[in-house]
Image 1 (cartoon, rainbow, N blue to C red):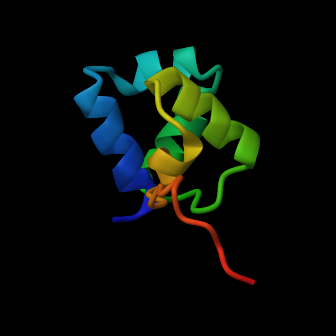
Image 2 (spheres, rainbow, N blue to C red):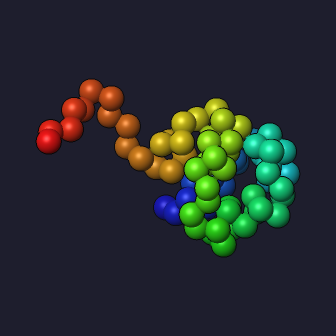
Length: 75
């Protein structure tokens, strides 16, 4: 699933319109819609932070990273 689809699924799960999520994340509606539609494939990290905060989730959850806090990376 691409980033736009993940954001859309999270937004719908939260019961928010595009306009409401854009407002909560302090983004323009057009800019937000472009991210959700996949026109902007690599938004700035601060934008991801704003969206994740507005959705009550971490950036990792939003972008689909697997979280395993007990796992230690071997070097």
